[in-house]
Image (cartoon, rainbow, N blue to C red; front, side):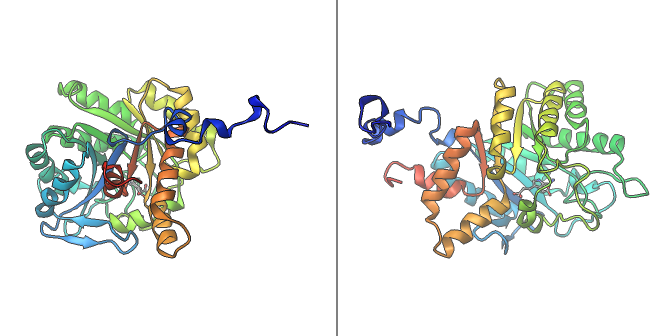
Length: 337
Ligand code: PBG
């Protein structure tokens, strides 16, 4: 029988004080460095439009962006991830408006660079908000993905965002070969040392993206994304996808969604410890916590803190989360959360 109070088996003596507890969790603190804030930028310049499936999250027109960011930057916000939303722009088969002069990302990035010179700007790169079929690449006649055309177009769009001042381009389309294609364009144009590539390397075909597709109005019109996003049970493909993107020149890796895939976060971080590891707490994870708290099942701040710590414990260096404004408040010295 183990004597629970003998010196070696007693764990309580190491955690009775907050500082002791911090020492027992040395690498899992949450700071402003560990957060990236995703923002939906609409082509409707004066819009501040609530998103029904993501209470508390809005689509912002360019005229609201400065007001939105100012208080967050003063609380320490360091990086943002921008998604374009096309309400009025025409959609077509190749996503022409992903990088046209009317595109909200193309218009907004230079202004944000001017307003907040120290804020690091990442841009999601995908065709789905701009294609008529809502798929992330260019399709053949039979509805299958045309890989060559897709990665050519995706890399064109990434380059356009880089040219207007994005410091990170983050392709979320999951087409084979897109990291290499983007890097090639960045090298050819001499932008390679000014723009980092954050690969959504390990992106699963997930039901947790539901609210996002409402937010960015990018749901596929037919079929699904199972042919280009990873099957949820597959850690083998997850490992191969990360290794491939590393070999094509990715600067940072991401696993997405977060909470249901923390084993994959750990696996990816262990396989590529020299690459910053990102975890995306996606729209469905946001909605789940929001509604759970709203209905009195959980305490939002407690559970959010626990989830963020679990992501850090699994190996995440940076967490992309819609809760960033709340977390910044939680991190302010006065509120002892
Ligand atoms: C689009 C894209 C999606 C998300 C980020 N980029 C949706 C999808 O792949 O279906 C999901 C983000 C979220 O759910 O918060 N390529």
